[in-house]
Structure formats: C-alpha cells, structure tokens
Image 1 (cartoon, rainbow over the protein chains, first blue to last red):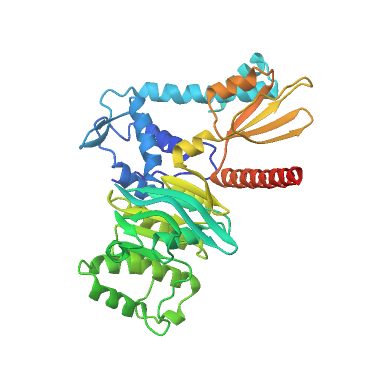
Image 2: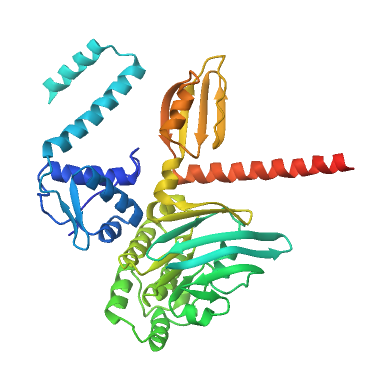
Length: 124
Length: 309
C-alpha cells in the first residue's frame, strides 16, 4: 500500500512528527479505518525516502498514543478502539497552545484573542 | 551483526593523520558520513574497502578482517567513488554483460528496471555520457548486483535534483531488505539527515560525533533568551556556542533536556524560543567547536613550552 504521504522540507516539525501527523489525519478523517494494515516500517521508509529509524520512531510514538497497534511478526494496524475525537482533540490542543504562545509574544489580551476567534468562526 | 566495524583505526601520512577512528554500521541500516574536505572521509572509506592499509586498528567488513580477508568480503560489497571510471570507448551494456558473466545471481528484469528508472541507454558509449549520466551508470553497476553492503563516496555530487532523488529512492529500496546496509559520505547534509539511521562527523582525522540520528538531532537545541543585567551564565556542560547582543542571548547546546531548560529558567532569563537545528547547523557548530578546542590545546601547549623554557 502506498500512503501518498507528502513531507515538507520547510516545515518546522521534525520528519517523524510530520509522518505521525499525516497518519493521524488519515485516521481522524476516516480514510484509514480501524484494523487497516499499515505499510511495514521499511516499506514506508522506501516510499518516503527517509531513514528507517525515523519511521520507526513515528510508529513507536503512534503506538504509545494508541493510534496504531503493532503485533510482533504481523505488522502494524490502525487501532480498533482508536478514538478519532481524541486524535482531533489532540491536534486542536496543540494548535491552541501555539495560538496562546504567539498571542503572548504579540502582547494580545484574552479579550483581543476572543474577538479574533469569533471573527475566525464567522469566516469559515 | 555489524556490516562494518572500525576500531581505533590509525593511518599516518606526512601532512595528515587518521586518529583512532571508531565507526560501526549495524546490519540493515544507513550510516551517513560527513566531514569537511580533507577531513579523512575518503581515507577512512578506502581503508574499509582494503584499498589503503591502516597502520593500526581493526577493520571488519561483513565479518571479514580487512585487508587480510578482502577478497572474501568484496564478493558482497559494492563500492562507488567519485574517481571511478568506466571504459570510455565501451558502452554501459558492455560493462553490464561483463558483470553478468561474473555474478551468478544476476537479475535481467531488475537491470532493465534500473536502466529505465535511471534513464540510461545501455547502447551508448561511456565517452558520450554527461557527468551526471556517468555517475548514475557507475552506481547502476553496483545496484544491479544487489550486494549486502553498499559503500558510496559522495554518490550524488554533481547530480541534478531529479537524479539525486532517483538515487536516494534506490538506496532506500535497498533498505527494504533488512540484511543490506549502506555507508555513504556526502556534503549534502540535507540528504544525509533524510536517509541516515546513524551519522558520523569527521574533522581533521578524528571522529567528532557518531550517533543514532533521531537521538542526535533531538539532543541539539538553540535557546533564544532575554536576560537582565545581573544575569549569570549557568554552567552548562554541553554549551557549544553562545552569542549575545544587548539583552538577547542565544545559546546552542548539544545535550538538551527539560532539566536544562529548567536550569536556564532558574537564572531568571526569559526563554523566548527553543529551536531544533538542522544537521547542517549541527555539523558547522560541531566542527567549529572542535577547531576552537584544537586551537586552545595548541595555545596551551605553546604556553607550557614557554614556561618549561
């Protein structure tokens, strides 16, 4: 299976984190259903032209986060009880933290931020 | 098992010396070998290949002692360096036919597939090929044999980005087989960072860093701080560089941890940003730190001599 994952060289996140986010995104969107078999670490490394150790790290951390399960000798699968909402929640939390950090360096107050958020909600 | 093991390898030339080089390539992995020009990359690789004999130290390639057992080892090793030449009045097809007569496990389908993906015409004479095509042709003659160990000295130098991508792709395909391994040297830190499992830096004949890539990249950080007038620099063990401009202080450390971040925060400094470094930045900082340390040592030795006199 080709994952069609596209990595970015201008992204601040390290490659293993980009791979994790791409996989989480596929799971969150429902494109990768629970029980789906992921490519082996070496297959994905070859597809993405990144080191085996980088893919291994992404898989280990996805496993730790409960997104995938790895069965010795059989491969890695999307977890049967993966909470899609948790994956999305985690992403939202991360983005909110980023917003909070940026707002602090810009010196924005909580009210300023609220106003910007409601504007953003109206725009979508 | 390890595909390559170098232990305390030394080689002395009139104007250059390799000093106690330790290098390990575990089977099924890629080792990226990085260093400035003249640092000893090619010499190390030549010793590994048995082309140059070490003055001291152990070298084992695929379990065979080098140079004593090199004939046995080389059966399963593919080596390409920049100065390698194919016969210019012959075609690439001639070379492939010759190799085919030596290696019994030759795979015609794989050969055709590689020719196709490398965009090479086997009918063309080598002298008519461009530089990039010659490099690709030399690499192809190694890939087609499916050796257990591939040793490439600057495999992508002089290649255009598209050709580089094709080569990296083929290198990673090799790694789909967990019994095959690659050692390659490169000045292109981006590609080393991308495909290596382990990274080794060499400078002035000495290995200055040799580590598993993820842990290595994770341990380096740049901290951007804003400090007050009464700021006292904490004693950080692995502070590689510090630059100050007014109240802004930038620290580069090679052993980053949350404890270190806490230690810096306790000085009263405000941490504005913590950044990861690219391999290129890590490489330059390591080499410069190594050179500063060498100069300091030399100065110390001079002073000691003066005192002695």
